[in-house]
View (tube, rainbow, N blue to C red):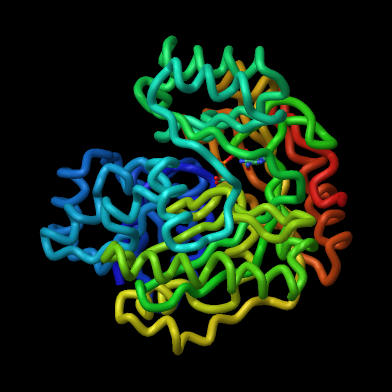
Amino acid sequence: MKLLLIGSGGREHAIAWKLAKSHKVEKVYCAPGNGGTALEEKCENIKLTSKEELIEFAKKNKIDFTVVGPEIPLVDGIVDDFKSQGLKILGPSKSGALLEGSKAFSKEFMKKYGVKTAEYAVIEDYNEAMEYVNNCAYPVVIKADGLAAGKGVVICMDKEEAKNTIEDFMVKDVFKGSGKKLVIEEYLVGVEASILSITDGKTILPFISSKDHKQIYDGGKGPNTGGMGVIAPNPYCSSEVLREFNENILKPTLEGIQKENMDYTGIIFFGIMITKKGIYLLEYNVRMGDPETQSVLYLMESDLVDLIEASFKGKLDKFPIKWKDKYSCTVIGASEGYPIKYSKGFEISLPSSNECKVFIAGAKIEDGILKTSGGRVLCVVSEGDSLEEARNKAYAYINKVNFKGIYYRKDIGIL
Ligand code: AMP
Ligand code: GLY
């Protein structure tokens, strides 16, 4: 088989690696890929990004199916465009992608189908927003409706912060339209978990759970990032938590996808909060998480190509998904100054290892040398019989990785 994968981050390197492991696969074309996919067995980077070019490439090269890594092309409707040309592609239609593309839409969907979620209001009028935060309980969570590269959520501790946030989102328009509509939401206290899954529209098949570490500094301090590390499975996802997730979140979500005729064959990722009052859904994403994917696919024993083919055939209910009975730990090596301001172009030295896998996130090959090209540079992934063993392996390795200004959290997987 020849496959096409869209995207260029650590998540995409992990997906490319996992697809390439399938004996059915001859080639994975990565558009545009990165310095990691460039070197991965059976993978080849191609310099295409526009929808039209990608469709032409898929037709010309008889691509068996396409996988989309990031949310932007999905929300843009790439799946509808590929399908209308008779091309197979994994992902929701444009209407399904709204579950991530619009927080107001996704909250209305949750409410309509009885998915357990925080209380909220959708507000489009500036004066109404200001009045709302004059009278609400604190902390309160203000969210930009549209895509905002993970920066569109602010937990406001008091009235002043809430008013400044509304000003930034609605008046200064820092998200270029995405913050013109707001979701203002009840603040929940608890621990978060990421549950990635795949659906064929008839079944939602959950993957093993994982735990992201979003803030830049140890102890969950400092600004949010794309994610600084992951462990899987998530130690807080007990069988009772998963049972409740299944009843109150997964089942009503599937019902909604069906009743809304969303034409959804693709990834659906649930960001949940485990609280004393039960399990709440914070958000849907319509793609895999980054860096959750790196740890989750590392533990997937099943062939990812078989799994995706089962979703195209509508046979996920019969798919015997298998996971290694192990823990995985992913530690992100980032550029000094990320997520605010950082330099690029530094040479990376990676010792060889049988214990860990390195997925490249922001690095490219220049004159045969791997150099940093982004904020999150690389992801060190390990596995172990215990969480501690997985952690120790990942840290023993990343301690030996070098590029100018390398920064990583020291507490990934410490509970
Ligand atoms: P979201 O994009 O909606 O998942 O929000 C991003 C992050 O903000 C989440 O991962 C949580 O850490 C935090 N967050 C979102 N909604 C809430 C909430 N209602 N209560 C507390 N924290 C929240
Ligand atoms: N790591 C969180 C996300 O991918 O949205």
